[in-house]
Length: 267
Length: 324
Image (cartoon, rainbow over all chains, first blue to last red):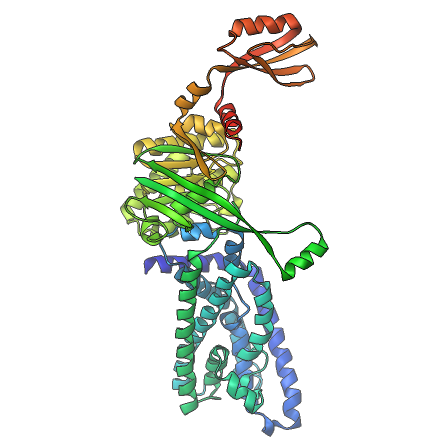
């Protein structure tokens, strides 16, 4: 266990060095959040009754999304991991008495948390002090907040377990770009990063709700604002656990199979 | 104890001709050729030995190292290292080995080296006292005191390589694999690394397997060499055996002002450029003094030197002998 903690720590401190990137990130997230809110405001003005979330819920959704962007974005892949595969540095990782899947999993969690750690505080603080209904409101109630935290952790794990599949596929494709392009458009859309999933037409939404992507940011962010509750929420959480376990299992088996025929690139 | 029996490994290599058209064609149908990197490689290495594993580029040296360190699975053959098969019991096996890949880095780029060391300590579960003892010893032997608190990206190649070697010894491995540890280092750093490897082998009884293209490494370090060419073991013997085998040859290098050389029995011209000529003397046919007098009769010599076969030449002649 200690070895994983150490790995977590070194990845975390390694990332803390990139402060300029964090400042730039904070600025981008503010800007992006504002643009989205302005856009939605225009729609809501025409007829706010037609929308599946009320505007305050939407504001919270957007600000939390921006604050924790690096936790939940599917396209935030660890380029270092993919480089180790394509340039052969994976040789060193494989010469450690540790499980490669767990090593990469921990590194990813750590990288995402360290980025979020640097970015979330200014965004959250700022968003909390905006005038209503543009501000980040308090959580719907205490149970919602607790469940928000729990499902956030599960969502982070789900995202990473999905990314692990992308990493493993790099052994075969030798370039992550193809999958990355697909990930950054289709999967972002399916996970509710572009527009919240409740805004999708009913038929499509019902299908999307069943995919692993709906178990990512969609669930915790909607629980926070109380947009999803009761039986629907319980179903969402069960589905999230199901997808997490499924992808963990697929990833581990696939990794095991891949490592048997892995070729270390370059001399 | 390391034992390899009939290890074979084939790689599939994508091939296409040059040009845009060919590149387009390759999008639809890729052509592959199969390269047999290792053909029935067998050898055994005892505890505490120091082995020089040599051969030209592409001979299969690194592949063998990777198989022995558990990160590559061979197509067929057996390999047992201290009772374990590396690719089957990878996690258990790598606990007892240290690996240095000269062309890669195991240090975290942006954090001080000491952080990487501590991570390695935790990964291998080295207890505090042993870690401290090893660290102090390695820092002293490799002269790292000044640099362990510097981020790896700010170290020179020589400094980094010393740190890399220290990093692979923090957990007291029984076997140390060094894949071109002196590549790109200057003379001083090379000597420091060599002295250190020698000491580790002597004091800790660590088995060392070293691949290199640097013949001075081999001469300075190893008693036994394994020569690999085109995926096969061509020679397994001591350096002095090898030397005896080729020592009937001497090389005479000379600078001359004018003249014309004629080869005679026992003297063969190796190269001749701009008043500089190299001859190989077969001492079975002609004595060194006869050769010198023969040469000095043919030309006005300004400088002359006679050397026995160096390890480098021996390897070249072995390559020629085995046509690799």
